Image 1 (tube, rainbow, N blue to C red):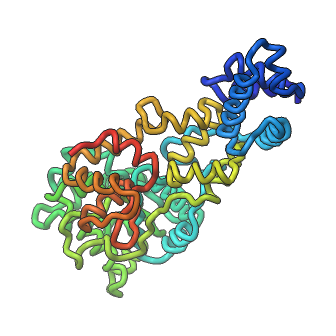
Image 2: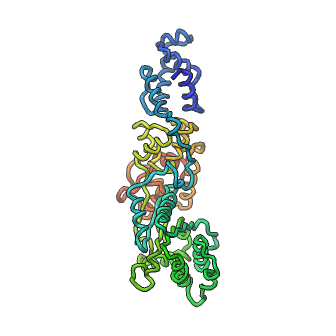
Image 3: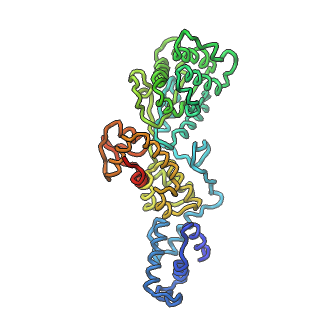
Length: 438
């Protein structure tokens, strides 16, 4: 590798903060084997000044590559670093911008074990109920689509219904909500004949829950002949509407229980497998005997571990040294979306590691949209802001009132440590210290 090749790559690595003119002169002369005194004599500078520039240059390179680089080892270290970064053409992967659902065929999807295998096993059980909970942008929906794909491989029908797609007025009335619910599911299943029209099965004599249950038991489920896996995404939307939430969720619980009653109608309900996906804790006052959130199998998605981050970095054609990996985990805490966003930008050389660290908690950083969204959630609850301020003031675990601790954990701002909490990552600590005030 020539000096020009090396400088060209360094230009990309350090963009937009490239080497200064003097730093490049020192680099070139050191490449040729000159001493600092020889460089000073040639370039017309004081030797101490050149030595200082050299020291800053090696530190800059060390920070960029996560490995100690000196005047004595820089050529061999950079050669190894560039070899690690330059993957043969047949191994290169087209990078995916990390937003939304990770495609089924994506090489960048990282499986969380053993949770995911438990999901696949659970959904094969008659009458199963699977609950998946995790904070914002942790990969819940990406996992959901893989469970549905696995279900289709077994010949099951699948429906994914996001409550975020429902109009606001749908949640103002239970009858309206359940009619939307039935119609949307029937539409996805292609059950649109005259016999499946709701007006033929919705009686004013019975309550909305009875009408919805009757529609599923007598018409929708029997029409399928095979199991139906019904994934309910963003059910947090229902939590916000107490006028419908209690009845809706108690209905789901009754369907789950019906499958195990051993009655004549149980066989129909054993063909229904429910997946409930949500971000926040269930704060609404549900009767524990009627809630679907304390039965079935619960999966809480965790952040990536160091080895998963390292694997994902390799998939992006990046090599993380042990020191850089440690810094990575401290800054982001293994948050799946933030990790992928970082690796994507580093791999495309849109940013350098130094710039990333300096700008991380600012409005010019790559995390700004994610951070603003979290700030919006916090600003809806002054009591929550006050509680989080207590966490930010301490470097160690802090004990909070239980409900406040659960809420902060649900948003994703803290990690639970027994009865205490701690800020989830350094990025959040830096950003929210600047942006929240009680």
